[in-house]
Length: 102
Length: 157
Image 1 (cartoon, rainbow over the protein chains, first blue to last red):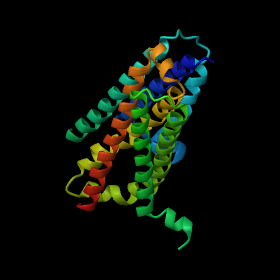
Image 2: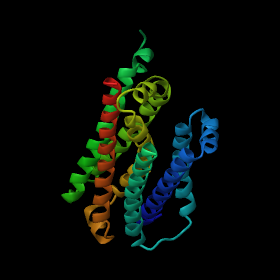
Image 3: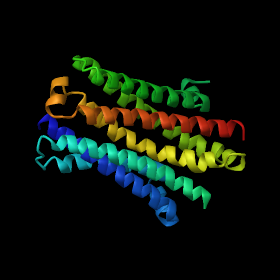
């Protein structure tokens, strides 16, 4: 696997993992049944989210390896990861800020 | 007091969590300097990235243990009943979830550290790699600030 392919695969897997974690976080705090269901797996919702992170990233890494990206896709994927990370940070912080004000 | 009891006591856990987080932040700032300066040592870049990832993994495991065992049952109720309940509702809730972003980002930074300065230029990855390292360090520093707010809220509840 060429270096740029590995970078593309890792960056896209990381971006997808961040999106899923952000969505699960917001869904769990707006739906008590879902949060309870998450907690039922490990005893704590955050521990389950940690396992989801630890499983999703390598899972998507393996799944995306079958795709043959172009060389410049590595740059696009890294840029995507950067934007997703910033958006996820703002989204989660804003969510809890407005939840507190409610 | 045996070594395990000492290691799993609240102040030691907080200290180790903070220490590993500082190791991670410092290592990625070091890596950022290496990449910006086009430094040619593959060994230094890889070492910085490995130390950064190891620091964040250590902070994750130790912080997670403290969070589940002590923060939830003991500290959280004190903050929520104190003068700054928002420190838990906003800072802690955001911190514990945003932290999860760091591990896959740090692994990606480690993989990118295996490229030479020439390869970063050839593949037009240098600027996005620098941005990734700034975001990793910035996110981690912001989490450190949130940790300070949470500790202060508990101390002066």
